[in-house]
Image 1 (tube, rainbow, N blue to C red):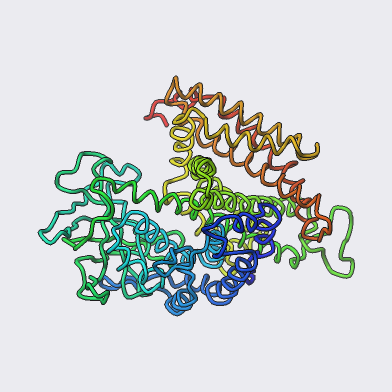
Image 2 (image 1 turned 180 degrees about the horizontal axis):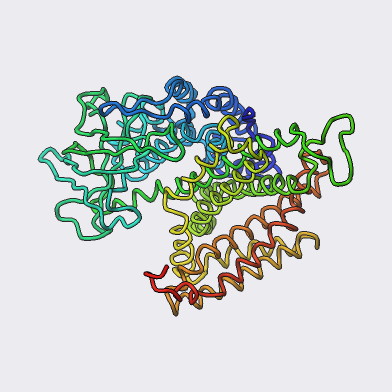
Length: 589
């Protein structure tokens, strides 16, 4: 596997040339003294150096060794504890954390780039700080001041990690079936009892404490999802002065043996009357947890993007070096026994597909992260509402489309390697195995598609969609024909498809499920077209273009010519309706 190179030039291009983010920071009182272009560049360069030099080299060894369970203890692979300590001491766990509790206070657009670099270098490693950051976000927004003051500083410092405990053996997406109980105690605390499964980082040897956020039911809770509360349950109890006390009644019963992310501990966690603290209001736990999950779903999408980027970096290095056959037009390296495989049309097709999906995905993840920042920091109430509407609409697309494209990209990378991509020493097969989980956890991609169609489109009658469609159309109309005409055609097609889904979904609920995945993909390809058009427009109008800009323009042309037409078949599939799905009885499937 080639060394990982953080794509800092592309990140800088998005920040400063495409979205002009520093100009918005300079006009935003909450950020003007916190961050500027130079700060952002310095933060990402420093983080990139540590990630590439310390974290990335542990990726393959971590996969080979994996985590081990030993009588309730989890031992992470060699080198992980030291790397985590270095990562935490540099302040990267709390990079987007609230400054009043010790965080660095960087906006989400910077945090998103750091997440990409970390996950591309080593996804298993990246999951530990990711879950901690998410837990901190829920606590910051919903916990009482005493809980925030006690738990957030050491979590931002990286001395303590966090976990998210939702899933139970009988209960995954349908949290209304949840059985874990929380009994109130006379001292105002709660005793939490139950078993949770698939808990990332539920136990590990990286930090001195783990702060579990646990969904559970109070004795008098209403049935279903409306009766779920959120509790903070520390692995080790914390005294009033912030010092660690005795162990809580929390234990790791086992860890899962998985297809990928083997260096990330996926735990069965048992809570046996463990002491916990209510976070937020009783029976409002899902609200508090979804504060975390909405950010995490973008984060999981970024994981798919990150693995696709790592796959491309490996594949392009291999394709330039590996010699096999001759170019269709004749020898391009006549002094060698064969040409490098990068000359072959099908290898070019795969590499350009990877490049177009990765760079389009990076623009998309940055765009969504910017909307999160607008919703949080903007001085304008209208701008905040618009950003919130976009975030709600785009979150399921970001999670599902980025990870679906991530798997496609890792598979292309393996194919470029041929037989060498199938054996372990080159690292390509690990990227596929690691990427596969991103389509499943934090809400499987089929559930994300149902959320997009059933809740986000039908929920407001397509109002948020129309706001985004208008934004794309307005931009397309100002472009020259090369990119403006196909972008207008694509958004017109998506408008038509959206109207069809809204109409048919109201009359037949089966149509929602039948259309949802293909509709989400058509949506995703159209969004990428919008963002590629924005990047191409910058490249065309740069006064002093570099080879970088020429590469952007050529990749944009490839995207519009070879990838955007996928929307046509997706639209036809959606409009075929649900009838063919039910021609067979279940026992004949």
